[in-house]
Length: 44
Image (cartoon, rainbow, N blue to C red; front, side):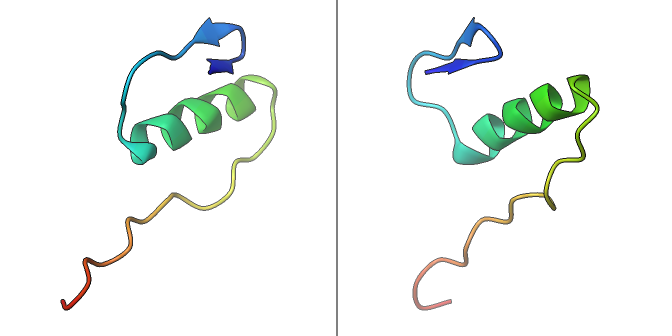
């Protein structure tokens, strides 16, 4: 996957990927959506 021309390789937490996307949006003066919140584990 590429984000803003940077190759993102390997298995990474989804919250990290969303952070990279948010940073790329901010670099373009676009307000990112609200922060990602991990869903609760089943049965919790």
